[in-house]
Image (tube, rainbow, N blue to C red; front, side, top):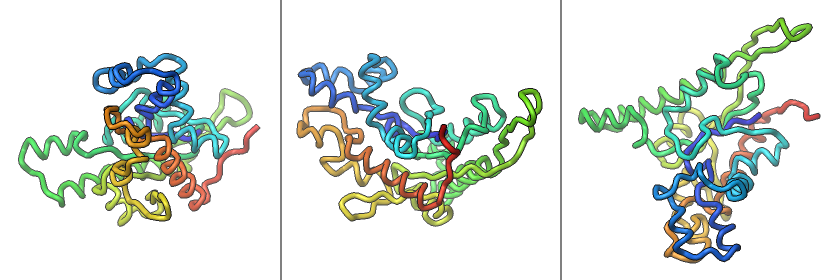
Length: 255
C-alpha cells in the first residue's frame, strides 16, 4: 500500500467540476459547491468516485498497480498532522505498518501549522526558527520511515516477529519554504516537478499557470475554484512516479 499525506490538493478538491460541466450544470450550481460554502466530504457517491479517479494519488497507485490510502480521510490537512499519524501507524493503532510500502507527502502551507501560529502570536517569527521547525518535522518523518515496526507472521497467525525496515518516502511542497529545505537536506526524498520541459520546485508556481488550475483550464474566470486542474494532477503524479522509480522503490509482488 502507498500512503498519501497532503491537503485539499492531494484530496482532489474541485475535480468534480469537470463532471458537472459535462452534465450541463450551471455556474450558480458549481460555485455553490465550492469550499468553504460546501463540505466536500458530502459529495454524492458518483461525484466522489470521479474525484478519486482523477486525483494524483490514484494516478500514481494505478501506475504501480498498488492499493493506496489517505490516512487523513477527509479534505484538507496540515503538516504537523503527518508525524502524529505516522506514530499511530507505527504503534499499529491506525493500520498495520507491515502493509505500508511507500509514503508520499504533499506539504501544505506552513501557516496551518501550530508552531508557525505560535511564532506569530509570540512575535518570534524569523527565517532561522522556521527552518529549524521544518527540519524538526522532516526529521520526525525520516525517523518513522527508518524505525516503523512491521509485523510479520511466523508459522501461523498467533506468533509474529517485529522487524525494523525503512519505508521509503518522497515529498513535494506547496510553497518554496519547505521545498528549499527538502532540496538542501533531503535531496533523496525531494520531488522535482516538471511541466513543458521546465523544472518547478513547488506547486504554487505551477498553479498560477492558467491550464494548471481548474477555472483557468475550463476557461471561465467566473468559476471560483482554483485548485489543481486534471493536468496539474497528472504533473504531480508524474513527479511522484519519477522519484519513486529513481529511488528504485521495490513493491511487493502482486497476486
